Image 1 (tube, helix red, strand yellow):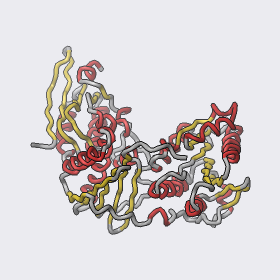
Image 2 (cartoon, rainbow over the protein chains, first blue to last red; image 1 turned 45 degrees about the vertical axis):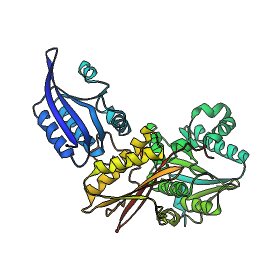
Image 3 (spheres, each protein chain N blue to C red; image 1 turned 90 degrees about the vertical axis):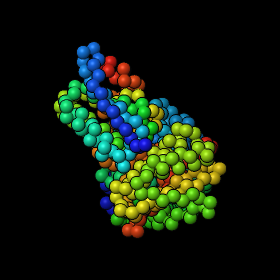
Image 4 (tube, rainbow over the protein chains, first blue to last red; image 1 turned 90 degrees about the horizontal axis):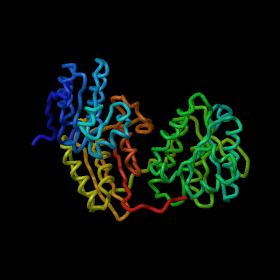
Length: 116
Length: 317
């Protein structure tokens, strides 16, 4: 079983499509390159909104955080919005301690993230 | 030797040696009041047991001083510098006044070494800052060796109401040798594990041992994050394997990582990275979640020992 799996979907929410990336497992320095490839490919499609569903992510280290921060920069630059949804407590705490949660909006669920 | 420049430059770092509560209250309150009179924002991080004492001596001025319980804020002494830096940043462009008491008698030997290292690093971290810093030392409750180190880490001393340049402070700056004594060997029943790429296994081992030792889930996850960040550095910065060692006693669990990397920055992990920074978060997180971190590094390699208390301890001071 892979340590980290990702799946991507384009979801239609009231006629406003957004990209949903689901990340499951443990994200660290050993697999953050794969995560970066997935996120870069989606960012390149220039969605207006990209939501990363973290509900299945058991662990995230600073290497994986940097991949997400990089995606956030790219989304910013092209006028889009990146949001994070439903992090488990250890991941949420890490986002607080690094103040990444002040840079990227973090929502309790995907539906709250789409409500913006 | 301290030179005259030490006495006149904008940054003042004073070791204050006291014997009685009255002396403590009058001197600390007087120092804070002098700052308030000059319009300087003032912050006091001292053990909770002495906060009311200082508030009482300040009287009507007390609400103008920001207080923090140093037994919480400085439990891991490596968290103090970024906290004081944040206070200075909140008041950017103004001279700030700070009382910091990171050393008290009930601290463990490892904590005392790291609190003394912190005192030495204040001189580097705030060398260019416009700041008055006063650090009280209880000469009746602390060992002579601790007081000697306080004389090494403070350019200025205040004792019996008299200010003087410390005869033991050296320029250029040095960390007292007592802070970098070899770490005591792990106990014989410690668990050893060698890793290279499988950090998931490293995390699983830490989580299992942390739970077995009695850490709460939240603190066990904190320790998992810290160890994983340090082990990730082995992959990033070395070509060889790292060694994880874990042990615990009734008071604390300790996780140690040893690898062939070298860390030369004495302030590593003591600066808050900008939120969008793409580096510098690893050791920052380690210090934010661990109760104490010991680090030894030279050309032959780096050992980082992360401590988490299992039982809450009575507040010190």
